[in-house]
Image (cartoon, rainbow, N blue to C red; front, side, top):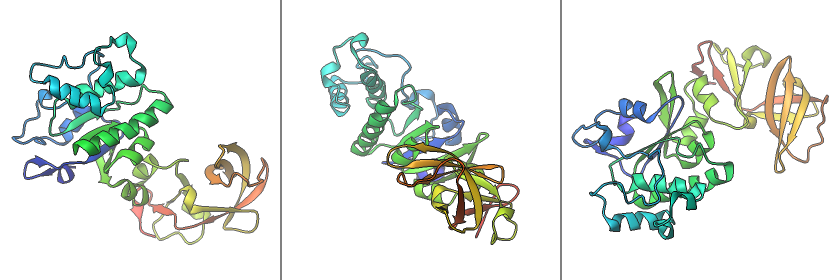
Length: 288
């Protein structure tokens, strides 16, 4: 992670680094010691989202000027709310106040630990766009911890995936999605989730492959002949697409289908694989 964020003891600018997994801000500080110029890892060095709400977020210390507060408030579109009491703010405005309390500090890097997790789906979507806009405008580097893959894919310049406290892989969202180094990383992104199936079910698996990782784009569904046959168990209609739940020899498979497709529960369909991912018995990626 250091090589992506630090050059000559200076933090690389304008990155949104998203950490997926059981991480926390304190863990991220541990993962990248000496990230700030001078090597300081003091908690006072970093700006984090504060856990308490204040109607005037200019009450963050004498070192923060009124001009800076008003500048950040305009950036967050809450300049008209600075004199409001907390009870007069909506949930989204409260979230912006908390983020503003971090932004006024102007650190070299911002650490944010699931700042949107308490918001409803609509507000989360709005705040994702706002945070990315703010990060771009400020040219700031943000280390952002989340379990939400949508946040990771839509906001990140780099994604880091953690397992059991270890950084497994870091790369662009596209790199992490298309070229995961192991099954754990592959399972962190994708909706519906990647399907893991025994390699012996399909012909043509490379030597040493124990498991096939099949995302929705790796599966072609048809009523005719294919590599294997599966039974439709359930269909979730989502408007622009449908989630098709299949039974493949007793193993569940979930993939996407055209919303106009006329599949029904109990139908027999065929599946064809198109460039899936392969993993060995230990979960490590194998080249096709």
